[in-house]
Image (cartoon, rainbow, N blue to C red):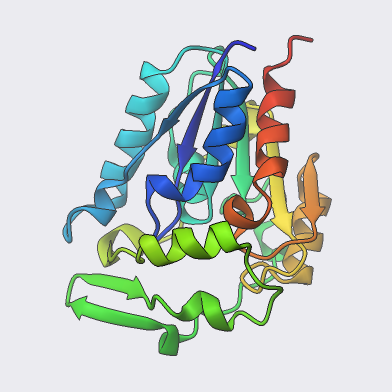
Length: 230
């Protein structure tokens, strides 16, 4: 297998969150570049800086390239300026492109985040509480995933990076797959139905928002599928 995967983590996360996906891709001979977003290393970083880091990783990767964004990472895919000759596919994991391919009035509103789940270390950052995942009401995480979550606390993210919708149209010119969890409380059924109507390749699996930790094989399979010569 030849080609690369650029993996973009979500908010309050880290590159290490792709550890189970990494294993499958490296085993298949795929080069993996997991970015570390500036918004999780600097309280004043803007979204444009996150986008720039993703674009730099794509420029450094060997084509064909599959770019995978989880949650907030998907918003960055939407904003990237991408070379369609190098990028074989975009994969939105537990994420939707913010700019719809049809009438924007048709899109349901996403549910608000519960402020009780967050702390504000200072005026510039917000962080998801580390015990949030314990009370999701979903099936238990695997022992390996629990070990990972305990060893990798949630990281504060710059509020400036999260403000405002992601505007872009890379998904309009590059083959795009949406991988959604049926039980994702951040993307409820009405939003999943909207996505299925408006995007040609939407895959809904038995999972919640934590797809990279709960269902990494699904991510690996989509990447490998995109890199197989046609």
